[in-house]
Amino acid sequence: MATTYDSRRLVGIKAERVTDVSSRDFPGHYPDEDHSWNLEKFRENLTVKIRRVSNRSIDFDLVGVDASIANAFRRIIIAEVPTICIENVYVYNNTTVIADEILAHRLGLIPLNIDPKAMEMRVDDESTDRNTIVFELKLECTRKKDAPKDSTNPSELYNNHELLSGHLVWQPAGEQEEVFSKNPPAPTNPNIVLAKLRPGQVVEMTLHAVKGVGKDHAKFNPVATASYRLLPNIVIKKPIPPHLAEKFQKCFSPGVIRIHPRTKAVTDTVSREVLRHPEFEGFVELSRVRDFFLFNIESESAYPPQRLFTEAIAVMRGKISSIRRAAEALGDQPSDGDVVMADS
Image (cartoon, rainbow, N blue to C red; front, side, top):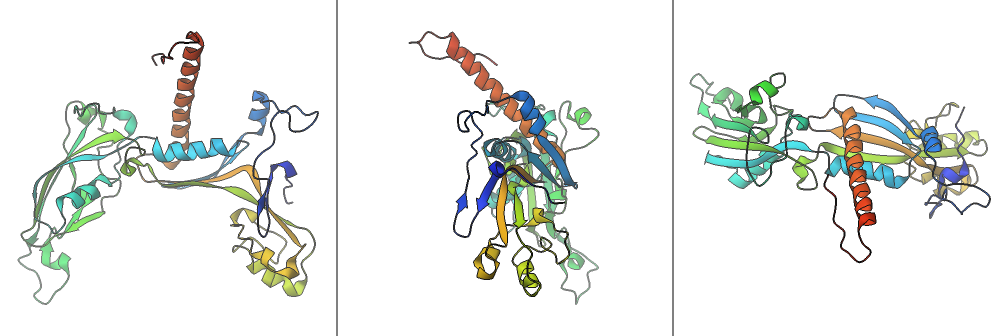
């Protein structure tokens, strides 16, 4: 049986406009109704349900929060959950066709399997075994002595004809060998092609990886994408004439409308195609549920996808703590004085 949602929760999707975009569940809007924020009511309405989890992605529902909160989590995942990436590239020799700057940029974008919890942020460019991971990269392309004369396949003709992310060799320092004994630092994907080499071409570099966040540089972004959309709500108000059933079905994303009674509205993109056809006027009503967010997160870092959302929650809690300290400092200051933040 289809779920029926309170009309106050719905964003109307019309042919030419979108209605009821903003929520109105705040004190004073509805007469004789108390909409002041209540923790118990919030707990009752809040739902997080995982739909699908794989090695690299997760789909889950976040229900019962305002769009500002859902979007804050999305932006924190992208910009403020820390990761480890290559920051400094020291080039000793590079005779490939790839310029030093371009190759350094490619190296910085390689996802590494290093848990950021095991590292500290580097301050004032002072490198220690607590804040810097060192990799060596040495590769030389040579010609195979027994290569077939009529072959044009580089893998048959040359040794090391491709520079791959898997060629990075970790150089442990200090306590790192003990800290990372169970999971030695390396790229998450060893088969990323960085450059093509031919006989006589050499690459020799030292690479320093550090902890950072996406708002400083996109290479620290822990995800390929973090997005959400509102749950579509499709109400068929009266039976579709049989001769129009197939055309009606094609107005929606595949799998949304079936000639069979069972439907799956969650996959619809709400394209409003059905509203373009006058013969379907009055047959269907489109909307989205304002506080029902369908999240999709694709991890491209050391984080399992299911951990990224909890990391974003931890970052937000830290922000809330900072706001609380600022408010307390504001209350403790004289009315004509400057506000000084309390130490964390």
